[in-house]
Length: 270
Ligand SMILES: [Zn+2]
Image (cartoon, rainbow, N blue to C red; front, side, top):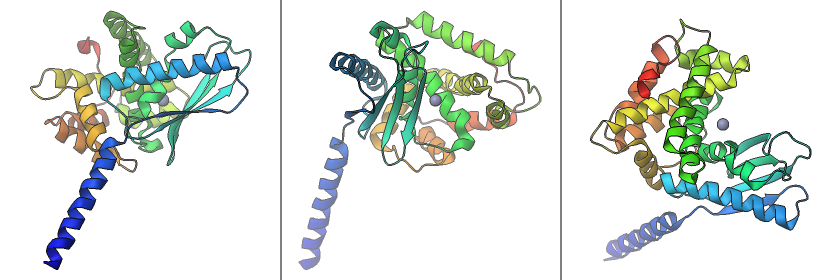
């Protein structure tokens, strides 16, 4: 009888814990690191709220609060000259912005869709930067499509333009992309590393579109609702995504990017 009671108490405890984790929803928390006027604050927070809403309309709710830090830059040439993610116990993004640009310029800028998309996956270490940047670069145009900033045709054209330029600047025809990525980074050829990485996700997306299982975006949604953790390795993550998509496309394409020399082929993806 005593054991049964203990068992029931444990069960109740587990149920309560799951209820807590299931009800966890992402809330945006804004931190104003410099002086901003009330009007600037309202414009900037509306911009991030809209972008986050577009991301979540695709992949669902992030299972943690997202901290947004605004830093002020005066006299910049673009609305968001610099931004980076915060991947500690706190998940968030630092935006360095020039608030004197009109909000329409902020909406057309790819930085917020890119940085917020990074948070969908855990931090995987600098060794796999090409994978993380490839993911955020792939997602940025998906999010801008969801925001209505880009049409479906413009999304496809944007990928094509970026990949063509990256291929022209690759310079390692005899090295697999995943191996060359570290050199590209050291040489400061960031766009080449970013867009070669995005080719991985375009490829995975096309293969999942043609399969009977869930597509890439649906797989990411499942991943966020069941499995998003902070301390995952790339191998663990990909095994999980393969399981969720009932496929082998994630691991198989990684092996391809690690073994087939040259810039990843992409013409057939469009
Ligand atoms: Zn990035």
